[in-house]
Image 1 (spheres, rainbow, N blue to C red):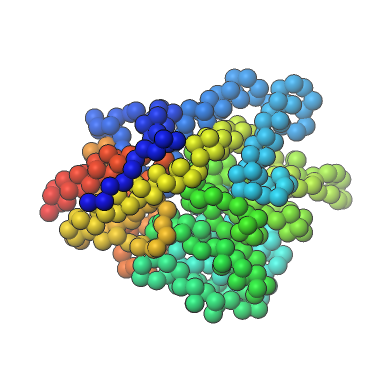
Image 2 (tube, rainbow, N blue to C red):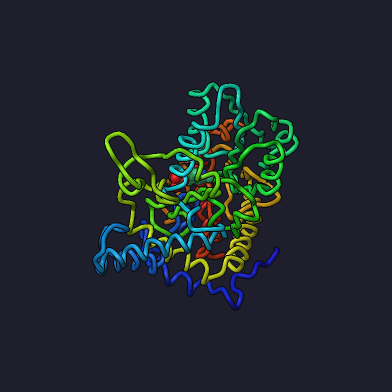
Length: 414
Ligand code: PMP
């Protein structure tokens, strides 16, 4: 058996777990084993405290107030924008737009840039492993504009066919919208190369970073993507806040999204002039508390160190994969050469949902179903999978508990 190191001097998973109060709870009289991190991650105390500090110490609306509380809230909100800029290495804070999450970021681009730039006969390319959030907005746009949605096929081992992608790119391609890490397969797509190819064809690229932002180093300037969207709740931050990055020149040219307060410079009944970036896309009172707390989440990741986190997660994935492959009747769906720390599988003669329920009875939280990737499930001719997704606080012992739990579950179902 291969041995995998759990603890490196700079990374003590047991100390890290202490920062996440929820990990101490019991489920069905068993210690919680939380392996549903791709759906949402748990939150460290620093994030919970940031929310508490805002509401107990300086709750106020931002930007327009001149009193002390408003100034403190505005400073904290804008500090969060700067933290995000640093986190993804954007060129400027003006390129960071706060949203509700990945889904809203993608919709913002579809409703603004899309409606301005996509016309009848134009083509948009997505991939066969997209989340519904990166399918439906483009489908709506294509239907409205009589444009064509094209799909990069997925190979048997769960990678994108880059040869097919090259063939799909034409001078009609206006946009490529692709996921960097698949939430259903774990595949890490070679987005940098794909972006370069799209640019050569004259198309822009939106990267769905919902799953990648927490696992990989993100450098939007190095990737050269035109848009990048991710969600706070998957990077150890709160729900209800997300980020849309866009290149400044493109954001400047786009029409506005929602109308309201904050996104305006001057309003008369005849005419409105719009605010500068990034406020032009942030109409109304934003989610101030959660946006402020997002900075605490990013600080937590930075302090722990993404390289150390990745090393730990790769170890968990390798160990889990090896153990799962030894279970008779179990097939892993998604065997890409490069994967993030999640593993999807089916077990012969069982339904994923039954496995999920029986694992929950043992305190083990996994996700079952189509993972909002129905076309991908169809591609593999399965109703869904069981998915175990690992975070920086998961341990090898928890992988062992999953394996033991699965053996028990299979016995019960047979
Ligand atoms: N894309 C991917 C790859 C995802 O995993 C998710 C969340 N499961 C989304 C988009 C949508 O994210 P949200 O629900 O936070 O907007």
